[in-house]
Amino acid sequence: MNKKDGDVLIDKISHHEILKTNTTPLIIFLENRIRNNITTFLKVFNSVFDNVQCFYSFKANFLPEICSIVQSEGLGAELIGLPELKLALRLKFPPSKIIVGGPYLPQELIEKCVQEKIKEIVVYNIKDLTRINSIAKKYQIVQNICLRINTQKYGGKLGIDLKNSNVTKLKIKINECKNLKFTTLLSHYSTQMNNFDLFKKNLNTLLEKIKILFDAGIRLENINLGGGFPEAVIMPEKQLRELATNINSIIQKSNINFKNIYFEPGRYIVGDAGLIFAKIIRVTDDRWIFLNIGNHICPKFAKSSLRFYNASKIEEPHKHKTSIAGIIPTDQDVLAKDYFFTNDLQEEDIVIVTNMGAYNLTFSNRFPYLLPNIILVKDKNITNIFNPSLNRDFSII
Ligand SMILES: Cc1ncc(COP(=O)(O)O)c(C=O)c1O
Image 1 (cartoon, rainbow, N blue to C red):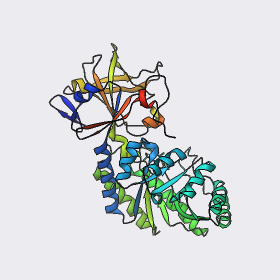
Image 2: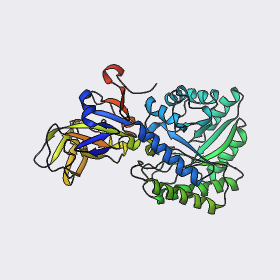
Image 3: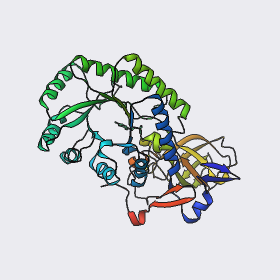
Image 4: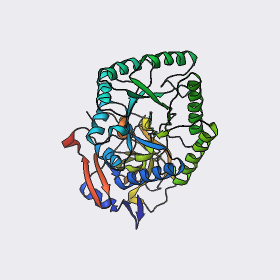
């Protein structure tokens, strides 16, 4: 997004041009931004590591058009359920680049993973191993398994807690499950990790646990550090490179050798590639503005670093504290408080909200307003990818 002669350019198109044929609210995804983010991510990590593999976390944004762009750039896929798996296969992600798993592994999902020979099933609970083993046995294959460990973060409930009793249980299970091969240890710490300390904590936990397993005679050849990177615009290339270099130096110092290192970025790839055009529908005397969107489209759960621009007054300084509310009829629908915005606030002003490409649609809910249209912009081209009157819903099945 750029400013030019009082206009806002969305890739190479004037925002006025887009609004000639579209009304607000309107969601826009920027294809070039997704491609650039992938290029930067791969460039940085491939230059620091010689054994890195990257899997896009579909849950960040599972629209088929978005995932298809990711596929065409050669990333793998990290998936949590059957609808995503069917989508990834339809989009021709090679099974050798698909990782599937999560806290809920229904029978049908495991069957499909095994039948399709996907790269790894990620297991969060030791109990799931028996079921996966019997399905793998039925299809006469040996299924690769990634174990997700508990990060030990305060309140962290996901993943296997590798305390002594569980290591013993795991050892017994590994010996029993002859149709499983234990290849990888995963630790995903959090989302929006803006400083290296959080990545360091994650890595140190992973290294500590891999040593515990090693001492118990369980050898895993790969590590997976999950995702958690902020939007690419928040973490510029230089900072990403520092992060990658620091991760590498901790691994080198640990003297543990891995075959491969995996990452599963979601937000970094798509977060700043999504924006929304909204409109001011009301202005109050105490500088609250109400937009024709709300937490049903930009939910707090998405934890996005939302930025607000008054596109109708883009040349005016954005330095006057303004609070921004949505249209859900509750006082809780606040999008931002005391946000630096234009002094002049008028109904009908167009507001552009950026950094909403990741998790906003994922966590969006069925508040009974009409869903926004969604378009994909590339250079000067616009493709409609979702029209609620025709497509009704963007869920995947
Ligand atoms: C296991 C795992 N990997 C990757 C991700 C993607 O995280 P992010 O979008 O923050 O990069 C998540 C998000 O919750 C996750 O749980």
